[in-house]
Amino acid sequence: MSTRFKIKIFIFIMVPLVLAGMEKLMAQDKTPKQPYTVVKSFAEFEIRKYPESHLVSIEKPSDFESGRYAGFRALAGYIFGDNETEQKIAMTAPVIYHHNDSTGVSQMSFVLPQEVTPGTQPKPKNEDLYFQATPLKYYAVISRGGWPGEKALKKMEQTLLQSLEKNNIATKGNFEYRYYNPPFALFNRNTEVAIEVAW
Image (cartoon, rainbow, N blue to C red):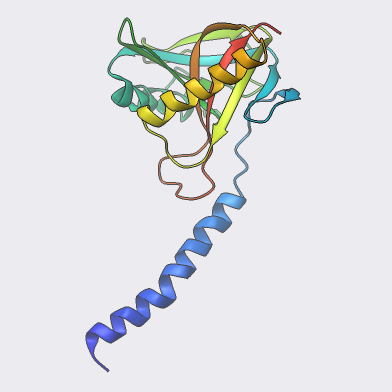
């Protein structure tokens, strides 16, 4: 049996096993999700009610693509213990990203777990991080799988806007992009485009 043939057999056997193992791990993902209630579903989007939320955020000047990664390390460091009490905080989903095209500033936020209430969170060592307490809001949300880039996200924006206009739903503020999966996750990915609405 040639070496090349042995390699082909190894790949044929191992690749499905690795992929199956990865899907099993992702199926067991117990990452807490930001709570919301679906108020109304439409063909291409849904209206969600989000309760008051507590966020840790960072802003950085950047272009759209690099901004998606610029603040992640600092935010991840904070919840993994880079704070004054070295407290570890549970990771939640989604990671919320916004890019202001006019100012060139990107904002990324983690939703803090419900048990970490405003005033009880440890102080970050990184002075660029800050906290936000957001009130109850209604969002229109459109979803897709994969890892959409800027062009695909802008297309989702247009689809959502057209659908909202068709249903006479007014928007408030700017678009947000919500990521539910880490970069290494290859399957069952979910990315959302959301915008606050008057509901």
